[in-house]
Amino acid sequence: MSNQLAPWRTTLSHALHRNRSLAYARYFQLATINIKGEPTNRTVVFRGFLEEKNQLQIITDSRSEKINHINHNSASEICWYFPKTREQFRISGNLTIFDENSVDQSIRLRVWQKLSDLARQQFTWPETGQPITKNQENFSLPTPSENEPISPFVLLLFIPKKVDHLELRSQPHKRTIYYLDDSQTWIIKAVNP
Amino acid sequence: MSNQLAPWRTTLSHALHRNRSLAYARYFQLATINIKGEPTNRTVVFRGFLEEKNQLQIITDSRSEKINHINHNSASEICWYFPKTREQFRISGNLTIFDENSVDQSIRLRVWQKLSDLARQQFTWPETGQPITKNQENFSLPTPSENEPISPFVLLLFIPKKVDHLELRSQPHKRTIYYLDDSQTWIIKAVNP
Image 1 (cartoon, chains in turn cyan, purple):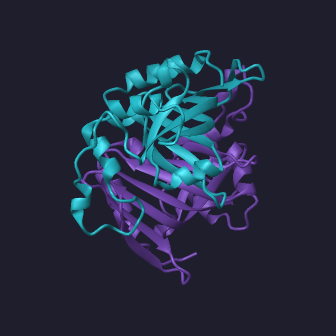
Image 2: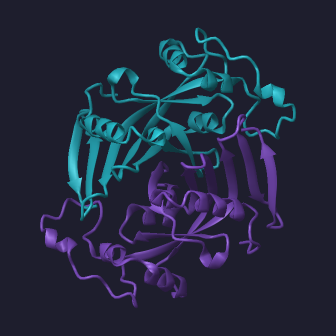
């Protein structure tokens, strides 16, 4: 993976800044492929870049379906639409899983510590996707300590290899492709929208 | 395909109604799989249901990459997040292409006629994704007649087979799965969020 700060990073940071009044501008859609080879797609929350690098941090539950998908096929595409500035980033790349068994626990711990109590508490909930748990008390367990991530907490690191930036404000629209060449250098190309 | 009006249709219509003040609440993210078997993901505009049935209408350009993807693998998943009511619909199913070679031109024509002049004009633009066309006049061709869809105009019909509805307003969240059983009847199941 390239550790050079990618040229699209500034553009994406500007979009985040200009859309900061909308909490949901920090949500994006993450597509993966299930075991049957079909596409799956869900909204996730952007949890910042890894140490000001190009990799995007996402959190999930080890019992969620996407963990199986990613173990089987790590390819993924993010679709991130910013309503206020009417621009879209499509980011394709691969996902790496950091769970309780990972050798390096430092990133996982750091992201866990930044979570709200409410977000940490959700990792104590009964298994997602299973028939509804009748006893609602199982959704009211104590919030886990911020010092130690609990077992279901998983950090996903998204490693981008291509970014497709579309700006809808101008007529005609503007579209820019960024991709890593063989020497792991980011190339910028203006294309038709 | 089942022509029974699906039970999730009312729920989705309510979400559309309650979010109607946000133009972008009619946008959703559509995931498909490219020829290399990788997931791809982009924002598209909801163009209504087919004749008040369960199928969703989307439009695209015959020269866009997703046409190749769909010809190769019609499986798709929609991720539709409604910001105002904080709810998400994940709709999985298959896409059918209606282009200028389709035997039945009636749906394609009807959707074309409903488009704005601006939307129709965009189908005259130079090929998307190609190196930028220097001559900007190529983006200013006359708007095509509403009576006859031009060649690049394609209607995609999304045929749902499963819907995963997540409501984030309540604590704990609420999650409901709708799926077609072997007799093509929609089944409703409450699951853990």
